[in-house]
Amino acid sequence: MRIYPHLLQGTLLINLSLLLCGCISGDPNTAAQRIAGQSGLISEKFDADPFPIVGWYRITPPVNTLHLYIEGDGFAWKNRITPSDNPTPRNPVGLKLAAADNHASVLYLARPCQFIGPPLPASCRANIWTQNRFSPAVIDAMNAAVNRAVARYPGVQIDLIGYSGGGNIAALLAARRHDVRSLRTVAGNLDVAYVNALHHVTPMPEAANAIESVPALRTLPQIHFSGAEDTTVPPAVARRFQQAVGEECTRAEVINGMAHGSDWAAIWPQLLTHQLPDC
Image (cartoon, rainbow, N blue to C red; front, side, top):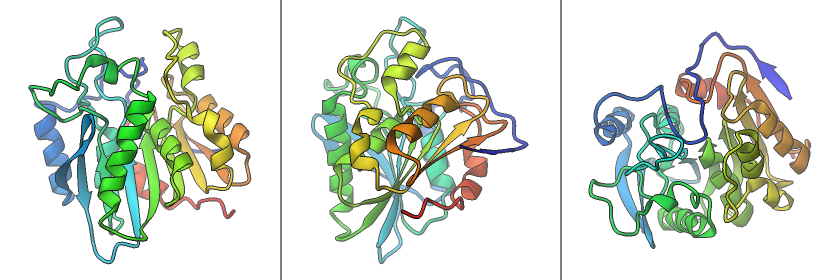
């Protein structure tokens, strides 16, 4: 595991999916449109039955490679016992990472029901962004949204990037797809059962867990970035994942001064230059 110092101090989150701080001000949908628009990202909604999935993209032909971002868990809980009415993130770190990426072709996918409404469609029930947020149905919907997006670009190779719980989904998608050439995660929850136990929260028996898919990921070049100050998904999670996958194709890098909801976008262009393992 490599440790990289950094001068930026992050904002500490004391939760798994409840964002208590580091929030954008005002309406989160409007703020997200502003973040995306400043980087030339165009919005689109993908009907990934049964859940609507919002995306933003910036495409420059010819599209040979695509940086594809998966958002975190969002505003899943109002408090430790009350689910939120809408999972739209108050601090859309995944979107900010996509907006900071200067790659020619970038696609960002929110999680099911984020940036939708109000009102939300009937399929958007609270269990979709709480206990079932990593269920097979959700993973299938995310994969369907990817399929719809990349069908326009035959032969495209995907570089997957996931933030927080989106890291789990990115790894699960990488394990099942044949068009993914690399995987990166930022504060990625790559071992759901371990993180739940660490925080003494209710187990999620239906959750698909990235660390259980490591046989399909052993030859995929990947880097997992963790914040040294992150108590939500601490660096031990990426280290456990690296040990399970094997170190030949997997790097786990700890960035000093960064917490779970820190301004990762400010240093993301630099982190993207970190070389993937040659495997």
